[in-house]
Length: 392
Ligand SMILES: [Fe+2]
Ligand SMILES: [Fe+2]
Ligand SMILES: [Fe+2]
Ligand SMILES: [Fe+2]
Image (tube, rainbow, N blue to C red):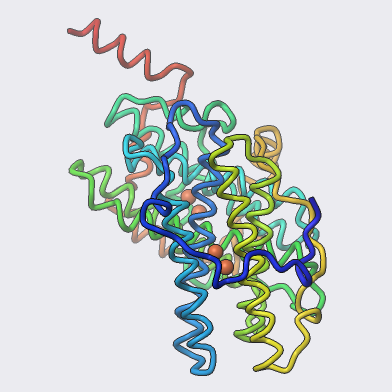
């Protein structure tokens, strides 16, 4: 299945229609579905959420694009609903959180492994080790609060051990900014990676900000507060790798092309027939959006979209366990820290970040407290249940 970004028409936008019944499809089963189906659902929700966020920002700054953006944005909103509502009601916010961190780890690792720009690959690996630690901290919370083994969600694809300690991830904002790719020289794959990871991290931040206050347990509330702060740092990092000299319309085209790339990646690997049919349908919808945006680009900017977009897509995002790769990055780069846009050994971390962190953590760090004396062991759920039984 080859996709031509410039000539494939996809589904014309006036044929992209929904009814409420169609919009709200049968959810997946949290236990019986492969973890990577959940990973794709969560990431695609993030991709759609970013397309709406971008559409609004762009409309607020460009009167002449408002009507076209309003038209497409309605489709994006309905797409996001269909995708996100695939998550089942019996998957608690904390279990979904485990899913979010698995997305952050496995998707970031997959991108980093094939990223052609060595600096951007380094940025991805830097973020990877931080989200890796978040999975461990939230897994400790899931065990403490509900006696549930996080591995029931991650299904053995992802290690649950400490990464760069979250308590050490708090940095001065100046140490979260990175160098951006050059829009003229960067390969399309680099651009897709940057747009994808920014979308994923942004929705993760928003998710933690939304669900943190749902918990009664004070430590859980603090834990979400602490990790949400890091996700904000991650959004800062990943948006800064995108060339800010791209025009608004250039960014619109790249958003649509990246949506095509992401749905295409899902289609190539999805085994769940019902979910796969949705990816196929939306791949065609995104090609329709892209056609529409390219027309707008020709009319308003008098530019040929072929100057901005590649004709063919790169290899799809690989949805597979990156366990060995992540272990290697942990061994090699755990002690890296940021000094402005550069990565340095932790002995050279700037004082501004050390001071910032010292102040924030002075009453203790919830991510340390939650995992104190805890380590993940296989079958933790059973052990806890047995423990409770024996105690009773
Ligand atoms: Fe979309
Ligand atoms: Fe994270
Ligand atoms: Fe993150
Ligand atoms: Fe779109």
